[in-house]
Image (cartoon, rainbow, N blue to C red; front, side, top):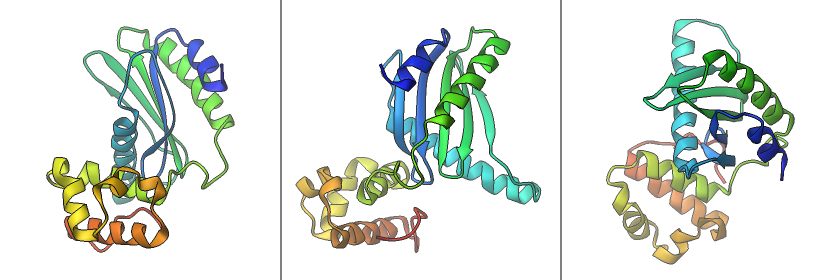
Length: 192
């Protein structure tokens, strides 16, 4: 049992945990009592943190870590930016006492923060981050692989294993992604 399993098992009302690297939104660690689409959750909450940061800049000059919660019909989701490159998402049963959830969340956020990797080591390979971003934002995502294969000249097999792409292939992928979205940059940090 690793540190996340141990910490999560202590919180009876906890349903899931996703710790994501920013800005790409790739899941670094995950835990759940039920099957969760961890990569999709990581991406969506990373997008929410990014959007909230932009809104915060419009409203004030205040800086600091973001923290917010969302109540869904069956779950209460607490999200906290642990540092500028990592966000943690805790999913609780909505029926749980709000005070108990806050207490458990405080302990979980502390345990996660204490075990974060060194900066820059949590990110998946750049090509994986590009594909995850494009799956979230490109129109007709179900056709994405075929469109990228046509634009880059990379085979569908190569695109199915982005961790194996070299720097040149990754640059082709990123350029094609920018073309698909009609932007100059995907906003994923420095280019490979």
